[in-house]
Image 1: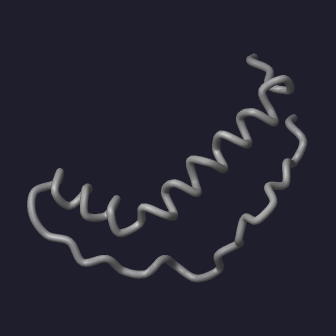
Image 2 (image 1 turned 30 degrees about the vertical axis):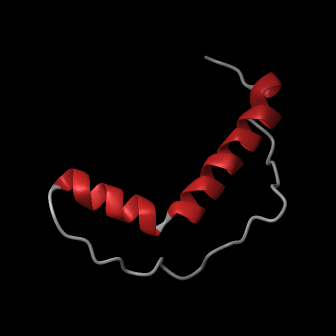
Length: 62
C-alpha cells in the first residue's frame, strides 16, 4: 500500500464545479470545456506530475 502524499496548495472542493454551456460537434464541445477550465486542468496535470514523481520509487507492480 502506498503512503498518503500531501500536496501543498491543493484546495479541497466540496461544491460541484460550475456549469458550462457548450454547443457544436463533440470535438468543439470538448475544446470549449477545455478552454473554460484551462487553469483547473493545468493545475490537475501539475499535481499528477508531483504525485508520480513523489511515488515513483515506492510504486510496485503486482
